[in-house]
Image 1: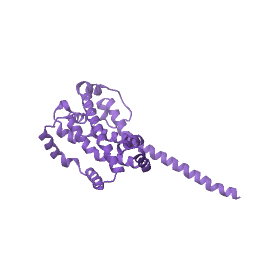
Image 2: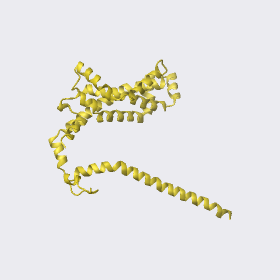
Image 3: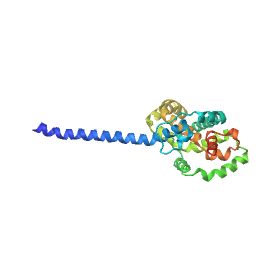
Image 4: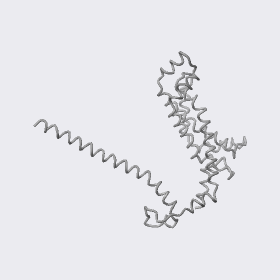
Length: 249
């Protein structure tokens, strides 16, 4: 009797776990559908004739295939040139960001110096300031120095805005490295520079990748400052060039 009595709670636990697993799987499917359906709908309308995109009721399956939209985009619009310029700007942003962020994050994570907390608060404050507030001052500054219509200058402006966030990301990654490793290296054979290159950076490669990805896509998707500083159509980046297509729909 006791063995039978013990079997019931176990079976109920198994059923509860099975129901929980089913509900969890259903929730994951719903979330995936919500996230992926807009992408599917965008691709569907891109490959089927235009008259079917606005028909009612809409069809979830393609009613035909038409590649003229893509042919028109690549033949009549310099989209490849736009994307190459975006890549050029984003690559400069990544390089400039890493050059600044790596020593800054190490200084905030491993060194103790006057004003350290104040600098950290300042970096956080820059993240709550909307970019629209400083478009006009930045535009005036760039015009004064003749930096408008200059992709390199635009890249450094993008880097200036992404450095604070990337500094905090990399600082968190540096904080995860045991302090004893760095202290032992400093005691026996390393300077701070050597400890940074030989210990911190090899152990925090995921953080470096995360910083690079954030910097790259922050520049790749940026539109506000690009639209203010770049006026020549032959210097358009991807975000500016694609925005011009909206007016032609």
